[in-house]
Image (cartoon, rainbow, N blue to C red; front, side):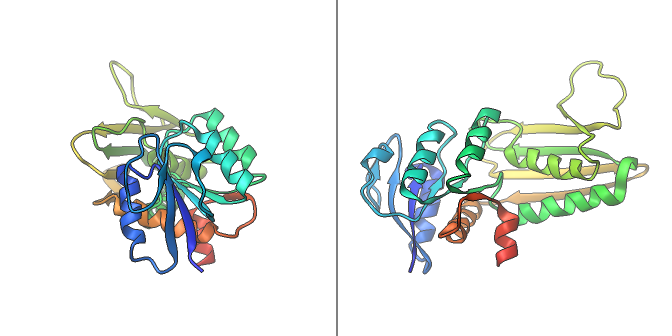
Length: 252
């Protein structure tokens, strides 16, 4: 039986990519959507969750942190899982997500790309091997419409690197003025915004006379849409709790 998906943010660019991929998917189907600005699509689209009539298994949320609690409450009330595919959550939002995970199966990751999740593991290994002898700088590049900075993926990569140092490194967002010599305790973070860049991330390990870089470049938003569908299939039927890409990969 196909996983029945409710797509939140159905009328946005990512929603369009998900719907396009689901047309030929043998394991999942879109049954309806929710969007603040509904328009006619291949499935019914409602302005709020209160209008939804279709039976669903999993919500894919490609909207924004605004209205997060409404989505989580719907998932709890209807016993369905939810894939949180947006970024820009506040600390308070994350606390809300953690609380709802006691009753709802929630899949949350800063990036749904398989390549980025491999990059995350590689960066942690590189930090463990190279150690304090190498300075770590992260550069992320996105399109000029992206609202949050640094990106959720860049923060995820920084966290992975910091795990190798038992969390002792501190994040420094950009540098300006006379900041003095770089401290060993820093992980530098730099955000670039311009044009239609889908998403590029570079983690640079700079040592004495040598530099190691690990990079990932997304050439299309379809990468993230495909990952969201994969996550929805994985989440269908799972018990309440928090899940991420490593759980999906371990099961596969």
